[in-house]
Image (tube, rainbow, N blue to C red; front, side, top):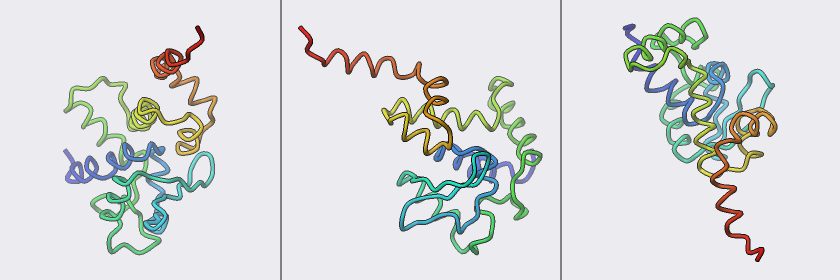
Length: 162
């Protein structure tokens, strides 16, 4: 494996799971795009620019990762100090997938789906998840709505109709 594989796994992958951001948004993230006072990231990507709240765990992570970095520096750089891009993460991620004996269909973008699924399963409102992920409520409902049936059933069971 490449010498930066451990760095990739511990930073880029962790950031994807903590935020649900698109890989390209994380690759474009500058140290100055993190507001530790507000507990937020400003992400730029496919749907434009948005500022989103992040969890306390994500705040702690980005404080550590961004320590001593200039505002214009990449928040999540390769071991060589360069920005990640699709060409640089694709092979490394594929190698990690193979080493973990995961299905070939697992790609970097799968981490976004995992994070969004976990948000939904934790009971987060679809509107909030859509805002955090930079997508529409309709997209969240169509792709992740099946994860909410047990939540809906439990709420319906608490309604005293008869």
